[in-house]
Image (cartoon, rainbow, N blue to C red; front, side, top):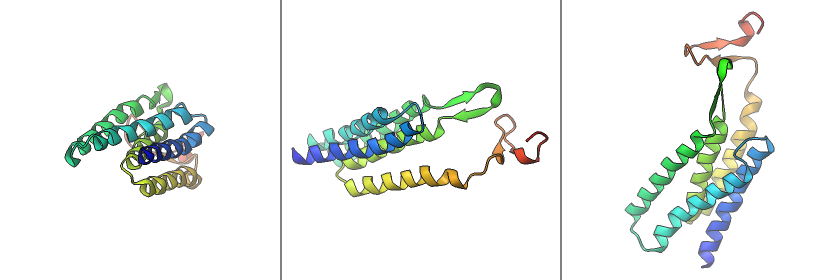
Length: 154
């Protein structure tokens, strides 16, 4: 029983860390969503392991979690009208990452889950500092890269 509690708590804490970062930035999927996704993912891999189901069957459960979370994450992605801007990709990726972290914790790979959480937070915190706006971006209609700085009014 202690093992189960530790795995679920690790999933909740690590999912909460990712969710806190998203909520702090005012994103739709925040603390509660990420905690629930992480705990749910941990439970989906814990249940078959505890019932004695063989390893191959657990991997099928994991595949189902990844697919299901993809649908949940897709709900966070928005295309904003005439602006041709897409928002929510990082939030969707965060929800997907949180599911992976929860599955790792549920499988008893707490150190993998912890390291992955740290790297994910580093990426979310550090990468925006290397981006320059305005700058090159991909036009959604044409698929071509456009440099705002070289366009009139940009």
